[in-house]
Amino acid sequence: MANWKAGIAFLAKYVPLWVIISAIVAYMTPDSFRSYGSIISPCLSLIMLGMGLSMTPNDFKLIFTRPKDVIIGVLTVYICMPLVGMGVGKLLGLAPMLVVGLILLGCSPTGTTSNVMTFLAKGDKALSVTVSSISTMLAPVIMPLLLLLYAGTYLAVDGTALFISIIKIVIIPVLLGLVMHKIFAKQIPTILALVPLTTIIAIILIVLVVVSLNAERLQAIAPSAALAMVLYTFMGLAIGFLVSKVLRMPKEKGKAMTFVVGVQNTALAVALAVKYFDPVAALPAAVGVVWTTVCCSFIASLWGSKTAEDEIEKPEKIEPV
Image (cartoon, rainbow, N blue to C red; front, side, top):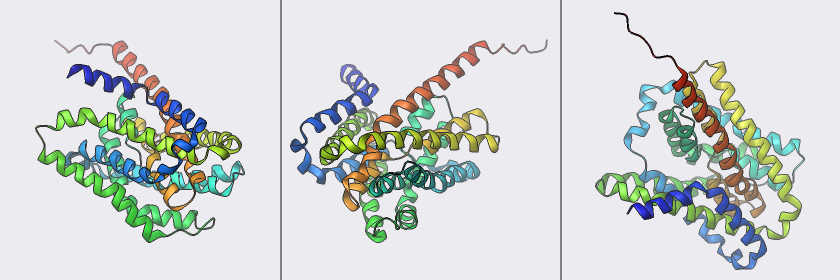
C-alpha cells in the first residue's frame, strides 16, 4: 500500500509538468482528442466529488464561529475578481471571447487548490477550507448573476441553464461526496488516498480536450492568454493580501485570504466556457491550471519556509521562578 501511495504523491507533486506535457501532446495531435469535448463536465464532476469526499460538516463550522472572516473572504472573491478579469481583458485589448473567459474565471468560486497552498504557507487552513466550501455552494446562484452582469455585454448568457449545470456538475457531486464520507467512514482514508490520482487524471483530460479544440488558434492567442493570466493571478493574490492588511488580520489569516482570492476553480471555468460560450473562452482558465499552481506553490513555499525559520529563531519563553 505504501508503494502506490508514494506513487500518487509523486504524481501530485509534479502536476504542472504533467499538464504541460498533456498540452504539448494535444497541440501536436489535436485530432486525437478534439471529439471528446463531452467529457469535460464529467471530469469536473469527478474533481468535485473528490472535494466532497474530503469535506466534513466541520468545514462549515467556521461560518458560525467566525462569520466575519468567512463573509469577507467570499465577498472579496465574488466582488473583486470579476472586475479584475474584465479589467485585465480590456487593458490588454483582448479578443471578446478571451475577455469572456477571464470574466468567467473571475466569477468562479475559490478553488480547492487554495487549501493546499494555505497549508504549505502555514496559513489559516480552516478559513481557506470554509471560504472555498461556502463559495462553491453559493456558485449556482452567484455565478449566473455575475455573468449576466459582466459578460452579458459580449454575448447572450442563459442564466437558468448555467444555474442547472452548476447544480449538476458541482453541487450534486460535492453533496454525494459528503454522503459517501459519512457512509464509508472506515474506508475513507483509503478512498482519500486515491482522490489526488483521479483529480490529476481529470485535469489532464480537460487540458487535452481544451488545447486540441484550440490548436489552430493557439499560436496567435496563447501569448495573450498567458500574459492575461499572469496579471490576473498577481492582482488576485495582491487584493487578498491587501484586504487582510487593511483589516489588520493576523499573518495566518492573511496568507489564507491571499490564496482564497487568488486561486479559483479553473476546471469549472473551463467546463462552462466549452459548454455555453466558446472553446477560446476556456483558454485563460486552461492556462491558469498550470500558471496558478506554479506561481502560488512558489509563494506558499517561501512563506512556509519563512514561518519555519521564524519559529526556530524565536527565543524560548522563560517562565519566572
